[in-house]
Image 1 (cartoon, rainbow, N blue to C red):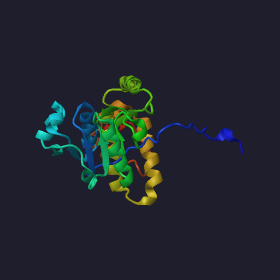
Image 2 (image 1 turned 180 degrees about the vertical axis):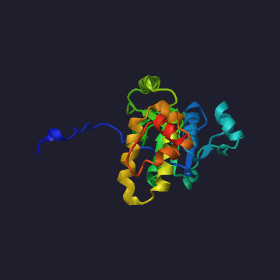
Image 3 (image 1 turned 135 degrees about the vertical axis):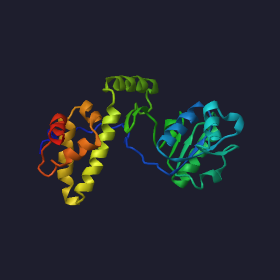
Image 4 (image 1 turned 45 degrees about the horizontal axis):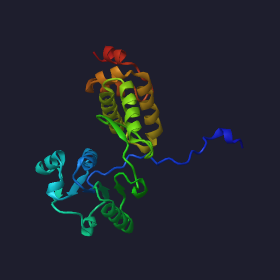
Length: 238
């Protein structure tokens, strides 16, 4: 069998995944600028966030999150018992020795952790993120050049059409409606193929403009496998 049929292995990378932390307990150790970014990432992912840091170490943004009850707050330095309910730990403090101690305790308890600016003490990294509604694009340099990751992310974001996020939201609604009219698991391959054809056939602008009425009219063509365009849908449903 020829090896040319398969992709070459490129070692040295990271396994980039979308980690679902909804309602999981994320412990953030620290309250400065880096911690503020970590907190926002976790809140955007609907995590339950606890911040442990002396009040004197809170920057303006973290203090705001605390005041608005967006996070739970412990006004002191980290203690080992803080890990008792943690599903993930994000440590961002200016104390290498204390950071390493947090990392060692997390390893003992098998809690995934990120120790800011210490790649060797991280189970995962944060990349440079572009967000547009349900669309998330992350660029990682595997710790080699965070600033370059930011530059590449900006180039990608600038190349994306406007309203990409809105188009994705409508596609998500259409998929939900499709599952309601064709719930049988055996329909899975057909559903996937039909939805793929919609995404390929329709422009982003049409997907953004698609209304609930348009979706219902389009779904009437699912059984036949046809994918008429938006204009045809509106002409036949008017």
